[in-house]
Image (cartoon, rainbow, N blue to C red; front, side):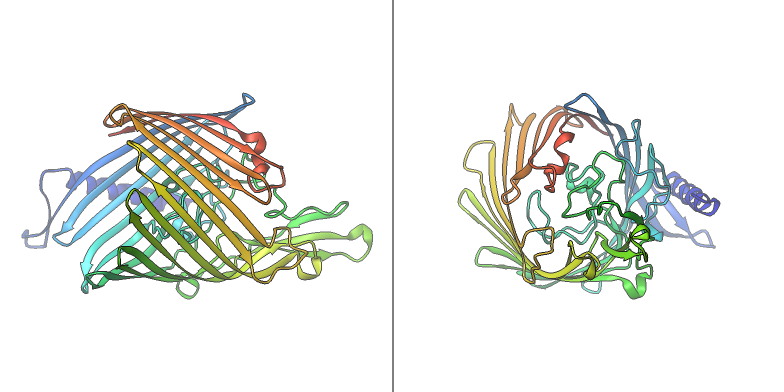
Length: 458
């Protein structure tokens, strides 16, 4: 981090400290030049303190992480509210956290204030809620959630995701907030429209090659040819938020007992495409150059859900105009492009006291399949979720299984949590991967782990 970045961070902290000294008083006032009161700003501080210790089933330590997340919510006016959330994350072990001070996936406007292998400090969210032009606005750094699927993302791709722990983190923690303009307006009593503009070109955070959850599956990472060197070039990344920004539309409707949405998102896919080029003249000089490149995509889809007695039916469908897949043919730069059609069908049952059961079927199909692709043309996955609250809801047991049918691999996540006090939670988790090490889940078969956590709300 350069001097300029440090200076900006200190300025932000100083400004926030001055603001806090005002808002923490019972009635803070901003005054104009004559000393007259212009507006009152009142707010409230809360904070979340979390400690997690993870060790794999072979006894190797994965993380010893302390997370402090302060939050301030204040009223700027009768129709305007400000929310600010910071996050300080400290990890003693350096098995998971990215070590780059300026992570490559982040845009310039979303860089963490400080980052190293053992510590990260960032402005997590910062947005204003306001009512204006007959609608509701949320402007600033925020999370935008689309879709209804559990454990599998189909439409919920507005915000990128951190894969530092693959998919083991809670979605709210792994989802990366973006600077966005989010406008929602009611069209009728049963219909609304959401418009998004996202100038923040931040992408998925991938685990570094030497970290615990670095990708190795050939479907994601190209295989190195025997005897050929590999050189990874600089990432071709868009950097102009105005001309390269992303935007989306969601239309929501309630009709005949069904919650329906139609979604459209014009965006960059959040994982870079790993184009490969064979360079050199003689066999002894041959090597492969890899150029990571972010590519545009049109996503069109929708959701439908309905509660029928003790059951809830959920469905989600998405069409991607351009997806890019690792291939064995270097004549096409080791990549093949295809349209993709995917869907999720889910069924939830809550007819048992304090128990929720859920099952999902997910399918992804490539419309322009090529035999040189590493992934299959059609991929099917199923998920099963069991959640049980007991002893007056002071204890909760949750078990989630995600199973990929064709590759016969998956992950089982189990978590037992106890509310010791209304603001103090203790929990024990077990994450178990299984299957062939060339599968998306099976690649982490050696990373099964126990996790102990403490979460304290202040």
